[in-house]
Each structure stands twice: as C-alpha cells, then as structure tokens.
Length: 389
Picture 1 (cartoon, one colour):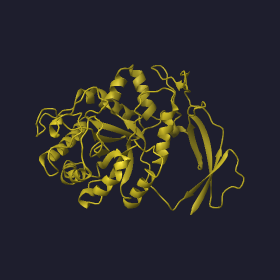
Picture 2 (cartoon, helix red, strand yellow):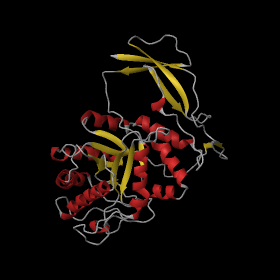
Picture 3 (cartoon, helix red, strand yellow):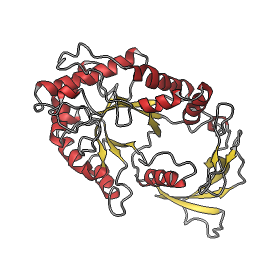
Picture 4 (spheres, one colour):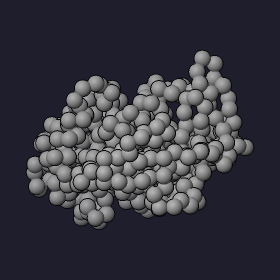
C-alpha cells in the first residue's frame, strides 16, 4: 500500500547558541569554536512536538546554521494533494517494502585525533566532543576504534612488538590508548544520551606475524588458516577486547580486518576472501565465543574495505554456515562510491536480496585532502554517500 506524506513547512528558528561567523577568503564562512564559546544545536530531546510534526535542523551554504524548521506531516492513502506549492512537498512511501534499519552515525577515536585534542585547551577539546556526542550536538552514536596504530599515527606500533612472542606474554596497551583514545571514548560516553556503539578494527598485527616483518608493509600472515599464526592473531584481538574492557570500555562490534584487499603502503595485512572465511571459522569465531564475546555480546563484521571487492568477499564468506554462525554484518568503506553508474547501488541491492540477515555498515569515509575550512565539497560528498548507500 502506498502512503502519501504531505509536508507543510513552518517558520524556522536559529540555534540556541548561534554561530559566530568567520569569513574564509576564497571560500565560505565558518563558525568559530574556541575555549570560550561554541555554537550549539538545540536539543531534540527537549523539543516537544505534537504527533505528526517533525523537526529539521538545517545548515546551508547560503547562510543557515542549525536553523530549526517544523514540518507537519499529513498521511493520506489517496493520490496526494492536487495543489502543490513551493512550500509543499509530497513523499510516497511503500509501507510493504522494508529495508535495513539505520543503526546510527559516528566517527573514529584514533590516537591522532586524541593527540590533536590534547594539543588544545581542555575546554575546547570538551566542546569538540560535546558538539559530536551530546544533546546540544549532533548526537553521534557510533565510534570506530583502531586496534593499535593506523596510517595517521605518529609512529608505527602494535601491542606486542616483541619478536616471536607467540604466547603474547608481553601484550600491553600503549600510551596512545591511555592518553589519546580511552579518555575521549569515556568522555563521549559520558556526554551522550545513548550508548555509543564502538567498533574495533585492526590495521596491522605485530610485524613478526607477517611474511614481510614490517608494520607498514602490506603482507599476509605467515602460513595459512589452521596454522599457528592465525590462532595467534585471534588471541591478539581477544586480548585487545579484554584490555579495553578492563579499562571500562566495551565494544559493540569488531571487524575481522581493515582493508584486507588493497596495498596502500600503510599499516596493513593482506587477507584473501577465502583466508578471512577460514580465519573466522577456525580461529576468530571460536576464540571470541570461548572468551565471552559471542554474537549476543559482540557483532563480528566481515570485509571492511572498498565496494569494488565487496561481492567477492560476501559470496565467499557468507555461503559457509560454519562461518556465518559467528558473523552479524558487513563493513564497507566509501572510496569509489562517487563513481557514476550501477555500483554501489546494484551491489547493495544484491546483498539485501541474497543476504538479508546481515546488516551493512559504512565504517570509513575520509576525504584524504586535509582540513579545508569553509569547503562545502566535504559536506556534499558525505551527504551524497549517506543518501546513496
């Protein structure tokens, strides 16, 4: 059955703490946020609305910053309104067709992010986290947490860089965790009105586990699934989960490996689709379950790479019931999604039609060009990808 929703727009209002404007030569203006003042988004939870009324918060290149608009929704099972004006739009919803739920939106708690936050006055770092996670911000509900270092870290490191410590006796979190990651995760959890769902992801295991013993070299583990190094990696990942739990941080999800397909010359680990399938089936899945991180406690996600390789991994891994008993979802990155044409649209349709029991989450989206204040391309690219994917 098709339901028509007529949207009637009413006058908008500005945010409770409005933007302090700063013009950027050759670009758009930005809102100043410093240790004494940051603009805020009115708390949605504090806004009382009647049934059939929606709140919209809008920032535009033409000048709006968190402008609030009330939308009155009128349901109709008829053909919709005949007289459509500029301030009247109609959306048609097929209530018989349901897709995946939206789990939320978020960012990443990297060591570099924490290092930068530590480099500014505390009140400013507090305002930044507040603007992302609190009721006066945009209320992010997800956080991706790297397992040790990434390509943006100030140094290459893992949690067990002692050569050939196969029993992981020297496993230990680093100062990056205690100074730059855990404190800001806890701050976000404190400020958020929701549970912040954390997803852990490893870029590279200790170098001595890989065929080329360097953290910043893209190489596979020594041996094959069923061998000792795949089990050591599973033990390593579980040790990370336990170490963070001991520091008061629990995870909602874990991906089997970050970007297992492509060599970008950064911290990495090559893992083919068949290797990832067997790693989960023989090592990671059973080890997580034995340690108390079964599917009821932790969501295990496969792939975690760019969409051109997604179908290969999905079709290889999710056809094996001995593997899928441990898997909850699929992680993907936004790179290449801007390409015009049938993917990722048809690819995501294929996954939804053939593997409807597994959710899909976009776990990484980076513009890769550095900070560009006042550049609306970033916002447009993010919005386009969120709507498309």
